Image (cartoon, rainbow, N blue to C red; front, top):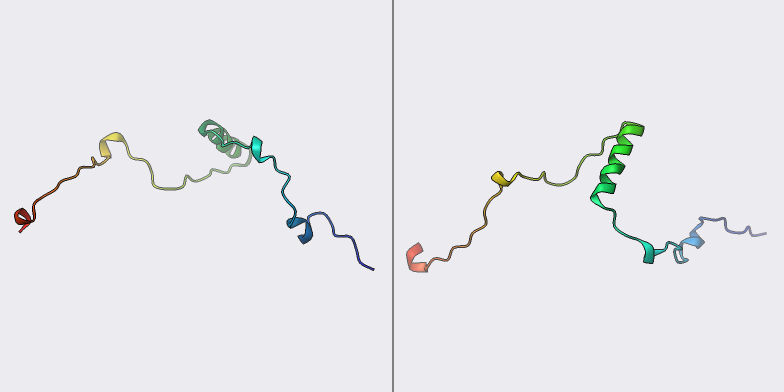
Amino acid sequence: MREKPQKGSVSDMNQESEFPFERARRITSEESQEFRAALAEQFGIKLKKRGRPTKVEEEKYEPISIRLHPKVLA
């Protein structure tokens, strides 16, 4: 005798999600900061920031463009 598939089984994976995508939104930076603070306070977990650290304005390079004639380079 075959058993009924349990909730969360492989056969359920083929069905469409019931997540309301039309109501989904991006979280703000303030919400992200609140989330990090709550994790640190409740669990003692400090999340590491990912990516390259930001530079202060004085350390940033100024992008320029220069065109030289080939004879000048020779």
